[in-house]
Amino acid sequence: MNRLAVTIGNLELKNPILTASGTFGYGEEFAALIDLNRLGGLVTKAVSSEPRAGNPLPRIAETTCGMLNSIGLANVGVKNFIADKLPFLKKLDTRVIVNIAGKTIDEFASVISEIEAAGGVAGYELNVSCPNVKEGGMSFGASAQITALVTAKARLITKACLIVKLSPNVTSIGEIARAAEAAGADALSVMNTVVGMAVDIATKRPKLATITGGLSGPAIKPIAIAKVFEVTRSAKIPIIGIGGIMSCDDVLEFLITGATAVQVGTANFLNPQISEQLVTDLENYCQQNNIQDINQIIGSIQVK
Amino acid sequence: MEPLLASSLPQKDLKLLQCKIIHKEWFTPKIVRLRFDEPHIAKLSNPGQFINIKVTDNYVPLLRRPFSIHRVDRENGWFEILFKVIGMGTQALAQHEVGARLDILGPLGNSFKILSQNDSAILIAGGLGIAPLLFLAQELVQSKISATLFYGNRSKDEVCTVKDFDELGVAHFLATEDGSAGLKGRVTELVAAKKNMVVQSNSMIYACGPNPMLQRIKEMMEKMNKVCQVSLETLMACGFGVCLGCVVNSTSASNPYKYVCKDGPVFYTSEIDLRE
Ligand SMILES: Cc1cc2nc3c(=O)[nH]c(=O)nc-3n(C[C@H](O)[C@H](O)[C@H](O)COP(=O)(O)OP(=O)(O)OC[C@H]3O[C@@H](n4cnc5c(N)ncnc54)[C@H](O)[C@@H]3O)c2cc1C
Ligand SMILES: Cc1cc2nc3c(=O)[nH]c(=O)nc-3n(C[C@H](O)[C@H](O)[C@H](O)COP(=O)(O)O)c2cc1C
Figure 1 (cartoon, chains in turn red, orange):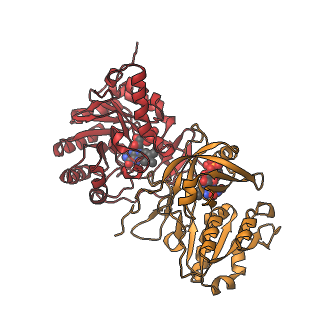
Figure 2 (cartoon, rainbow over the protein chains, first blue to last red; figure 1 turned 30 degrees about the vertical axis):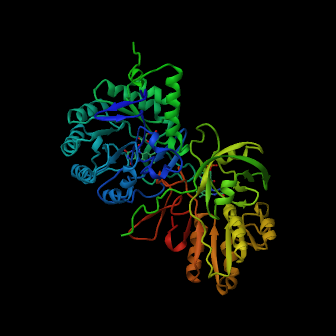
Figure 3 (cartoon, helix red, strand yellow; figure 1 turned 90 degrees about the vertical axis):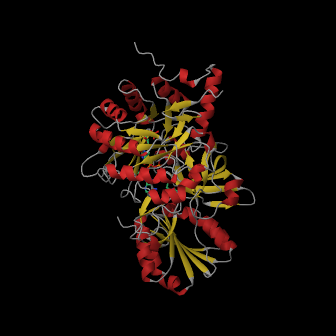
């Protein structure tokens, strides 16, 4: 029996380790460095209906134990994704989840429809929470109502696992989680990056061209743990924990707090072999601690 | 339309390596050269390529730091980097001593193109821009292409590695801003002063240095009708085409950005726009 297996909606994962969107390309970039088939799954860079060039430079800045980015969802567009990236992904023996970005509700729907027609993916992660692209002043993920509309529309199009990725940059993440759940989401990814900013003291200019950006890396882990905890109190569907995961201890912390699986993001930049390493480390942890089923750990947090 | 993110193919020789420092040489209190025992990179890398180093084993600094491959000994299986201490990461890197093993990702990026129609080459370096040009000079000499170096620095004591160029048979001309060695002024002024050499020969121009210098070189070479390749530096997170952070403005209308780590770090000046 595989003691690391977990289930997210209708998706069985061989282990709870996935890679986070935007930090793992389309998988093939890592093929020379790790065995992709050992991962529970991978989430692609965002895919939108047209190719996007992304934001002006500079797009990244390093901060203490973290990094700011304002990539702006630069991506190849759904047609190139299907033609150039999907054939490689289809050959993998791991769950492929496509991160979907749209400027409108219809764009989310049409990108999913096109990929459905091509087939071969296990699920979709709706990126309603990117802090770096704002459309007409409306930031999708900040509104429970719009999150529900995007989710419901996607639900009509696909039976594949539908995951909604939530933003921490909102008044109540619990409310948005409930809206996504009610609209038919199978799972929730918690969380996207935290809005942040850094200023160059010599030039007195913001370090990013977009002024603010998304903070990721170990600096945000406590925020992510708190958001996962909050969402466990608001929604019943599985949670995928994301934010600052660097080690097996971090993975365990998310699982104990209530995440069924996790995604590893920024850590892939420091150590491109970390995702596979975490699978090994988690296996060893379970063996050493005589844990027969990882699900015993999930949500095992003790709160008085 | 040309695809926006074209060349994201995995680099076939890319490896994550633990490389041992076997030699360390200080040129100034801030400029240091490290030699690593690593046949994989020594044998398979090409001039212009770089490596991405995890300079500490904790999260400060968090990200890797990229450095050009400065020189290789393919036979004995070592390579070198040459760098200047400018911040936290280079400071930490400079503290490692002979015998230490560092976590290195490489070789990364594309390389300088050496074309058979050029019988000579002009190398233009500003400051630490000298780093990738020694490896390039090694390969040019191998390919029987004669090379000349124009090398600018703030002052005489920052001038380093010219002895290694001498040994390869590469002639050099210096410029320093304070006039302590060679022409007083910037390297672009040196190039202007030696314009006849540049224009007359059937040479490829290769340059590396700060962006304002490279933009100036680009404009000068366009006026002289010379083809020029430059090696660029930007902030970078992953180094292998995943984070999409290391952008530079391109000159193509349909494709506004190039990625330094995978489309570069070497570009023809016609491809990029380095104006602020
Ligand atoms: C492909 C490539 C090859 C490189 N090769 C070499 C090399 O051979 N030798 C060498 O000395 N350096 C090289 N660099 C630059 C080197 O990576 C940086 O100097 C280093 O990352 C700085 O790290 P730090 O932590 O010391 O400085 P930080 O603390 O990160 O920065 C200190 C200051 O320098 C600025 N800065 C940092 N990096 C750069 C940069 N790349 N361009 C302009 N300003 C910068 C920062 O904004 C800040 O103001 C290369 C960079 C790239 C992308
Ligand atoms: C460079 C970069 C690009 C990202 N691109 C996307 C994206 O396209 N879609 C998305 O949903 N999240 C994106 N993210 C967010 C990550 O998937 C993840 O939610 C976040 O980085 C927090 O996890 P971490 O701290 O482990 O990196 C990106 C993050 C980074 C650092």
